Length: 240
Image (tube, rainbow, N blue to C red; front, side, top):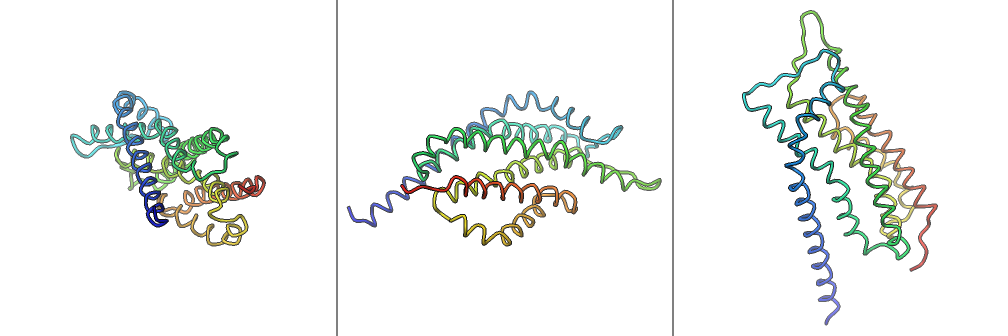
């Protein structure tokens, strides 16, 4: 077999593995959706009761909006519960490019990735979302009353949870890129100013248009980037 044919076959095999990883991830979310739908109403009640300012009530503006919001909430919950399995599929796709010693520690890396996702989600729900809601209510005056929609609140909660969960993967991503030899720690360190700018731009896109939430996403992500770079330098890659 010619070298070009071998390389093409290898690319096709990797694409096939990626396709099946995506299918399995989507299937996991689909299977969890009915269970998530059962618990979504109770979870929504908890989120509204604990994350909105006291006495605040959300509004819906169409007869079927609560049903659509419940379906959306179920999807967010199913994705969150399935996140460890989805990350496992991602790690399974990346694993062939790791060193043998790293493959033996793949379980630990997967656990760290799941914990980072959970930490990002909890950080957004425990700190960022209540802060945004309180900030919004702060505009209330004797002639101005907030009318925040039910769907808008759930969209915001879901977007922040997923965004922070993904952004908090930064240390694992940096570690893998360096350990697999795609980039060197020195090159990543030299690109630090551009990476920091990219982090703040991503935070501005993924968060509501206020400086507080953008900074509260960007700064922890920046610190996690430095942590990932430090970890990759500490566990310097050894020759294959």
